[in-house]
Image (cartoon, rainbow, N blue to C red; front, top):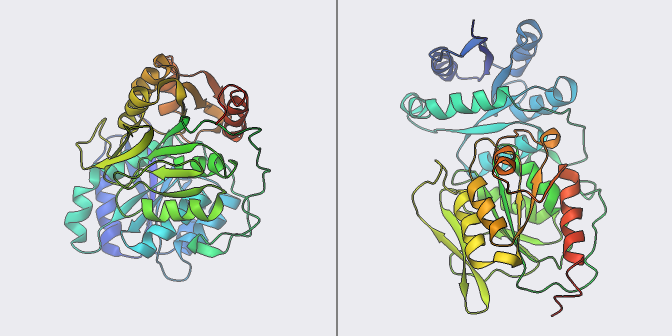
Length: 364
């Protein structure tokens, strides 16, 4: 008999609770075992029903979703899919939720809720399925200042390794990630020195959220982090994030690398797609490229990462134990794309070590 994914829905809207329960119960592999109108009710429901996944709204009475999530991840870590409205504040708070340990989020429509959620049904249940398989770790309290994502000096505690020489501006780093990737990317980037080579990043994320994600990373990192802008030169000491809902790749303009941001078709169902970015890396950077595959569901980027390796790049892949979801890294390994498979905490140092080994050969 098929073991169903047991879901508790937490939302202060009776309509949303009913719609989500109906969407969940239509699936053969999951069931909504409870629905709570606020976190205090949800707390008792979780104790009683022991669900596999919860969906969690942000703005609710008595205790907001962010406060509840923080307590939940400290005391009883479990897979959570956030429900967030697509507003500037909603995007910022969603970034905070992912930092606290939420697996993923769905952008709840602000108007036309019934039709909007119906259109999002496949996305909602896909994310619940992925969340049910995620590796959830206990989240320790930090001194970060609330839900806005404002930088606190204690956030970046790990010492940053340094480059022993100036690395050629020909060097370029490519990073791909999906589910769990926002925190994984932060872990890597916060360890990099200010004079690090340019970095191009694709994280699966919808429009409206990458701006907040880039701003948060920029507040935490020694390198500058921004959304990629079409036609701009990729400079050392900078990381460029694929804008949500756009395809991002790298091209050449004379001796320079430049960003290409365009409204292309989805690739592997994604826009932005890691496949698009990594394929451009194989074509324009070759032996000057480094590729990193981080946590994520599916196989986006695996074939292109192998193309990068065949073109001469050096590739690092996150190991299973440190992934939230070991899908994309597993596929990259299966395609023979990995030169090293490492815990997340070791990736930045391994990359710096590799670059330090090249500084004697590639002085500028």
